[in-house]
Length: 118
Image 1 (tube, rainbow, N blue to C red):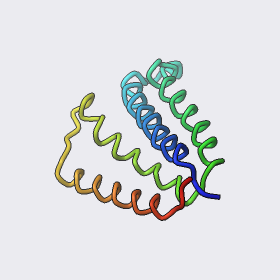
Image 2 (image 1 turned 90 degrees about the vertical axis):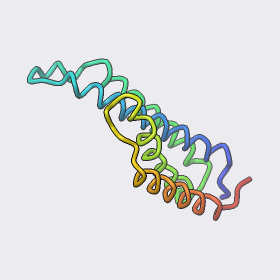
Image 3 (image 1 turned 180 degrees about the horizontal axis):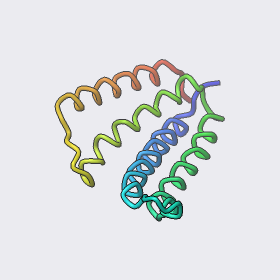
Image 4 (image 1 turned 180 degrees about the vertical axis):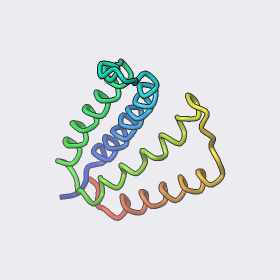
């Protein structure tokens, strides 16, 4: 079955959702201590909700395309995290990360272009 273009876009959106979930988890990790209830903090819960919604949307996208075309797009979550995390944390954006992002973009582009879209 040819992969639908909207399914590709949906997977890109899923990667943004799951990347935001990772950002929320990082914020939530600051609130974790020896109290088991500390795991119920809002950022962690938002992270889990973001991941859950991402999983549901990924399943919908996978129904309308080839797994070998759609799933590699999940690698773009590395890009979102590398771009977003320096806005909230003392992470740095280095030239090496830029090159890594370029390689991921090239790889995902080659994989998705190899499929027939309708």
